[in-house]
Image (tube, rainbow, N blue to C red):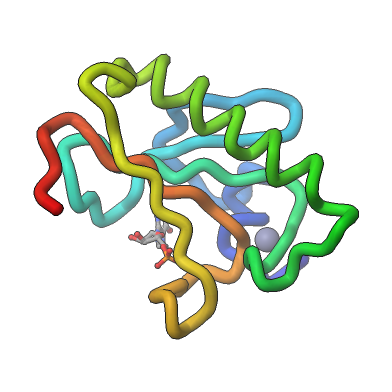
Length: 111
Ligand code: 5GP
Ligand code: ZN
């Protein structure tokens, strides 16, 4: 996608504070953090949202969760734990239409 902010970040065209990268996934600090640790995990492959996923994306979705687990462990928030948020569509508060998982942690989060 040529006009997608997170595709541009994944391509290195827009800078980010990278915390993790592998062949298929990238994680970087959220520009407007809502917790001491607030990281976004994205697939490099463009998928607009969970609503846009189909059977073909099941592997990517599983790997996205696996990358999230690895990033959380590398950030050291796996213990005592962290929150994973996936906003879906405008009604779910999604602002950037390139699927991404929020990792929030670094403190005991209120409900
Ligand atoms: P959403 O509401 O779509 O689930 O989350 C989008 C997130 O992306 C927001 O938390 C917002 O702060 C973050 N964000 C928006 N633009 C940028 C940017 O250019 N760089 C980074 N690092 N984060 C961004
Ligand atoms: Zn994209």
